[in-house]
Length: 113
Image 1 (cartoon, rainbow, N blue to C red):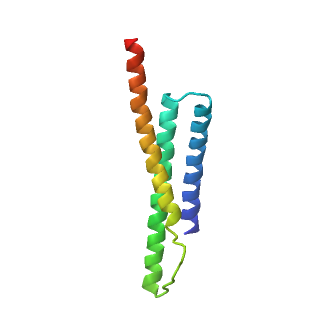
Image 2 (cartoon, helix red, strand yellow):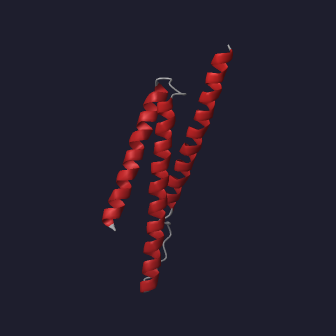
C-alpha cells in the first residue's frame, strides 16, 4: 500500500513540475505556444491519473476494511483530495484544449491580416 502511495505521489510531483513549466512560460507572455499546450495536457493527465488511482485505492481499502468488519466513521472523507485532483486535472485538460483552439484562431487571424 505504501509503495503504491509513493508512486502516486511521484506522479503528482511530476505533474507539479509540468505545471511549473507552464507558469514559467505564461509569465514570459508565451500563451499560445505548443509547449504550453502540451505541458498543460501532460499535467492534466498526470493529475487525473493520480487522483483517480488514489480514489480507487481508497475505495478498495475501505471495502477491504468493511469486509474485515473494521467499520469506522470518519468525519473527513479520504476522497476529498483525490476528487480535487480529478477536478484540477479535468480543468487543465479543458484549458489545454481551449488554448489549442485559440492558437489555431490566432494563426488564422495572422494569415488574414
